[in-house]
Image (cartoon, rainbow, N blue to C red):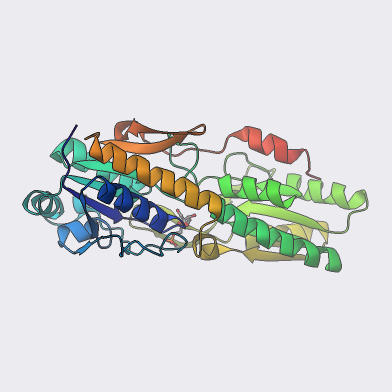
Length: 349
Ligand code: F6P
């Protein structure tokens, strides 16, 4: 067996509920194996700046249920910073890290793969995102919490929609995928779900709402994913953004499709319409029990991979089993399985 002494752990990119549960699991498993655990502040910046914190039993006590990350996070990318890679590799060597567990999204997994493959850094990846869009793994922790938050919101909007005979639109996150929209839409009994993976025109959405009202229903709930396009039967279509700027990874800043679609629906159907954009509420706060269990499984799997010297791999959930995949196979975005939308569609209109 690979002999470990010092295990680092970092959280990078956007936060999501369950990060602390992973940190706790990695640390507890490392300490139980007789190893030393060290936290790196603010993702890969912590390595480049050699900003560390000793993680003993006390440091990870009482954090299982906490949202956010006790290690802070950043989008620091050593490949984009002057001498970034040299600083990271020097820190790993001179501070004698035997393994580092990097918890992050798709971009962090790319950095992790490159540092491992191109520079021999002993890294293991753990995927995190509320969007559930990381390939090679069925579910990421944080997703269940976001879905629960969105479902709670839909439940609340249902009662007020009913009282006022209104159409209520709920805009949820998910970047270019509709996982949160489809799952919360099914769980909340949405009357229409609009996602990037399957284009629905404004005319089709309005027809579904009108059909529902024609059969005696006086209100409707529409869930729309932030990445869905505003599309028309004419073929005209556009993605709505909060600004024309992109983030540091080149992703557009999404948001606003709810308001844009809401206006179209109100004008075309004549039904009073209100819009709620849930935003970062979906990413904050305590993880659900399901996410705590999943995050704990990810953390233990990652610590075991580190202990076995299985570097360049990402912990993954396939079916009900925890396993791992080479980071080289983690590419692109995992889109919604449209079977879920077919299930949801039984309840539309
Ligand atoms: O990837 C998680 C996510 O919350 C997306 O759903 C959303 O589009 C994006 O991050 C928001 O990013 P930021 O926190 O940079 O505004």
